[in-house]
Image (cartoon, rainbow, N blue to C red; front, side, top):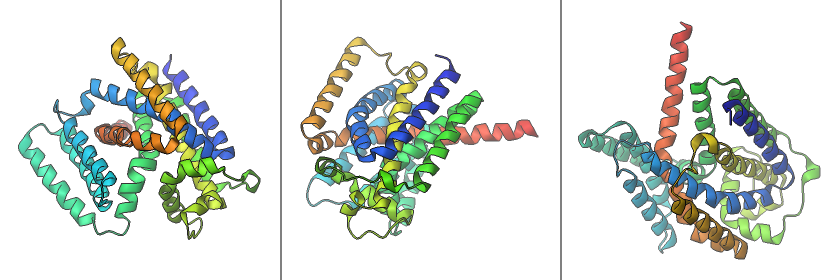
Length: 321
């Protein structure tokens, strides 16, 4: 498939995701997260492994796996320590700067020490937990990091079609937040409310961040206009995040793996879907580690994307002068 064709396909997927998110945001999110999500985790982790996770060392990924294990353990075993969640996430992300750019362990330890000091400095910030523990592994991961990955590819290709798709992504995001049709408000089913409960904190904090309303209870995300506005944005961001990955199969080639691994991936995906269908909250609990693991293992790629954007923009600036 030609590069321009893929970009046009992505533009169409962005628009479709946006339209569906306007009408059934809660249901769209639950479908995308439960059906498309597990396949994305499994295939992306496999692809990252083939790429050595974009790090200098062969076994650097073990650090991220261990960090994720600790995070999950502290969030599932009493007494739960949610305060350490943000510390672990940010420290893991900053440590990836060393994994991506530095091979010498002496200099790596310097980066690790500086990262520890930086995390400690930010730890008492009033918005630290919100931005790092709530936004970073969710909306920043699926929206900002996806946007950066797209932009880096477009700058390298110098693709007009790719640039159009990025502009459409931004336009749809603005439209979802600013246009608030009252006639699309509907009663959210009991099943959807029960299944979405574990994500409610994200909506609640995004509503406060955008100053859309002053909610007194997380349950109000299902019954207020602000709740629907933010849910549309979340559903749109997550759905396109997954669709973007699968639409670029011919470019990324995540499917080119040994037959046994492909069969194992499909089997694991079908089991995951079965769990979500049987009990959505059970699926969330069982796949909690896998969902966070793919976020952690993608940190080096996120750093590569942002530094790549900087290099490409600098090169464009030099060419103009």
